[in-house]
Image (cartoon, rainbow, N blue to C red):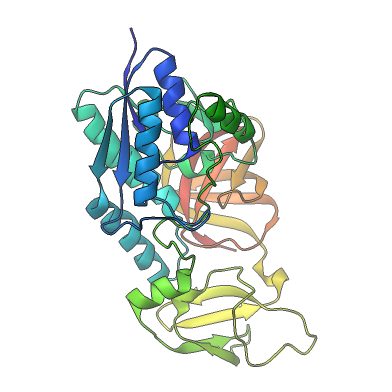
Length: 352
């Protein structure tokens, strides 16, 4: 007997094919599009943004082709509180959040899953590129599109009610299948930007909400080398857009080394000063098997993977890297792997 599955349909090709595969497998599938914006734009611009009126229409058309019921759920208020306001607060605190990760955690696999289970559904299916076997999360076969990192915050309970039908397929195969199925989204561009900042101007978005707060840019010796209108506009590892008044004596570029929100100070320095080998993380989520064999950690979505070892200390996770990493920012997630299998995740607090 098949499962009752709620298929989250964003209006893109991945979620459409995921829903089609689940329906074809004999499950009782209902499609749902999440309305996450109180004032959605009627059209996206290229690959920028998502959750527009156009996306909801694309999702409805895909559901019609597949032959499944379709609904739109208004999650705008919850999204504003748990994702957008969190995003702004994290930048104001000098950290660099990942809103896609927070959306998976708080919206798709908390708010939506809770409602789905209350309505009698057995599971929620999405178009994420990741594999899930007996509740164990691992990387997609398409390493370039793998999204296990942004799913690493999910709990074992949430994963037990999740289905990721695309984990054994490449993105090219998904698009070819969409075309064969007659889904009009087969060639639709992927959304690569923060969905609630459709124009891609993160600094402008934050300035409107946090206002201007002039401060100093200093070098490692504490000497003022420039000024800014808000420390929230910077992230660790940033090189461009620093607007530094004084170049270095040797002409080498400077990078953001740290952000101090209390003093509103941004510290810059050479790239080698960004190198860290020990990372302390908080709020761990252990959602995989016990760590064995070769361990690795990913520190940003689609970022480099580093060999590592780790230990827990007073509820925190201390990760020691086999080789130095650069641009490690507080607020990002550190997702731990054993081979391709996710062991768990935690939020980066400090790095040295």
